[in-house]
Length: 193
Image (cartoon, rainbow, N blue to C red; front, side):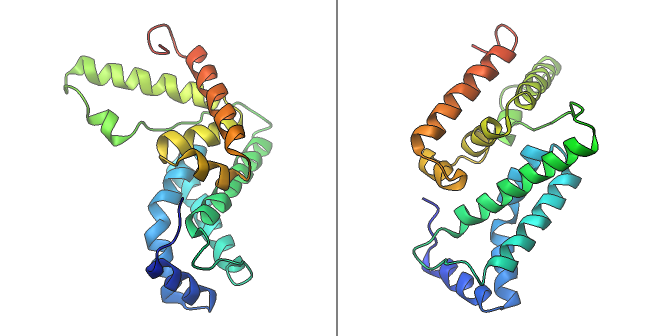
């Protein structure tokens, strides 16, 4: 689980008391992971920054009221806030765009991009795969996309995803299975196998 160590618990306690330097420390420690999650949902850096900002504003404004302590999971709590902010952002964007099918983009992990040879053919193939995965992810429901992003891009365990989503591990496994099956159908022959 995403449990705090003693050092992080101290920062949370100080932040709950209103210590701005503690809030800054918590922000710096978790910013990149929350930005990555937001980027996977929003598809662009500008919207991801907005989601990141909204997430931390909500987190720090409700931190005093929440029941986090050394046995709680600050990161799980923060992920849940970020997921909700991401979903709210997507809903607002869809409303503004009159439910147009906006392009949702994502990047494959840096490891995937750097694998293999740097030949033009290899670069082209990676680009094609990336676009197909992006299109497939865009067609998933928000819950299925959330499970895929948290599992395969954020590398959370099933139990951690269940805590973030507020559901059972069985539900997470079902959503993940269905999402991957749907993605496999969306990918052209050869890529989905």
